[in-house]
Length: 377
Ligand SMILES: Nc1nc2c(ncn2[C@@H]2O[C@H](COP(=O)(O)OP(=O)(O)OP(=O)(O)O)[C@@H](O)[C@H]2O)c(=O)[nH]1
Ligand SMILES: [Mg+2]
Ligand SMILES: [Zn+2]
Ligand SMILES: [Zn+2]
Image (cartoon, rainbow, N blue to C red; front, top):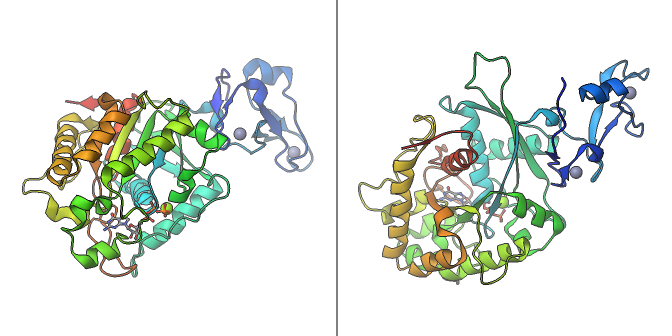
């Protein structure tokens, strides 16, 4: 397929790659570099390898900056999306990402096909799904190991299946990292590029870490939901936000007196465990309407946003709200409430059948911000 070379994003090192930053190698012998012929150049196409083993196979594409082999379709993607997910240890990141991707892949109302495109992504995702969605013995996914460097990026391909009559489909890539909470204390070049290049930040907060909420929760539910494992059990909500904001500022190289000007989804995880702290008629506890509405349904999102702010206020977490307001551009902040399991664990490392709740709302918001799905009013 021919294409006009646009700058692409290396999903591994997260550098923006121009034509000269991309190389072609023999699929059978990675040490053999293949030049583009003048015809390849003219038509902007990937060269073929005519060595005896390959016999005309399409060459592998490599990133000249990090030397990783890039996904074969990478030059044809329409958009390279990244979101960053941050959250202290045990806030629920890994279970949330697993539930989000699994539900997106399996909900017939979602008009996109999601596929993992690297061996690491497939392995990690499958392993997590085998835990959470195990028909006999569902259990939470394991705690993420702390990494000496960055964790491997999780790479997904998203194919838009709405344009069924057309011959070509829009294809996007989505990259995120699921680090251990402890990784987020480090400064690293790649983390900087990753955070800087993300238009959208997902910040996961564990409602059980909020002093105003935690005393209202059944002790078993609290313990089985990782409530006592969090290292920040003693901090108040405002301090948790300030710590995260400091980490983001350092990595984004933003001064202390400027707000963090990105779209920020403030996502409260584990909503199942704090159900009883929401009033009757709660919108947060209602199922997500977005997929059925074929877009991001703003009236619902606004109601959820307001309800969570009020809930924080009613639970003496005004300091949390103030810390968000003083660190972020409030016009770009939205509050979400999700549950990866749908109901609290039934024992230590023991789940009932998982029925995730609203897990893909933040991603729907991001897709709307990217212009891929519409905002519906
Ligand atoms: N009740 C309830 N508990 C949850 C939910 N999601 C996660 N948990 C619990 O929260 C704890 C932490 O979940 P993880 O997803 O591993 O959290 P993490 O942020 O990835 O943690 P690190 O890998 O240590 O950074 C586990 O004990 C989970 O069982 C949820 O939706 N509801
Ligand atoms: Mg984790
Ligand atoms: Zn690279
Ligand atoms: Zn070859």
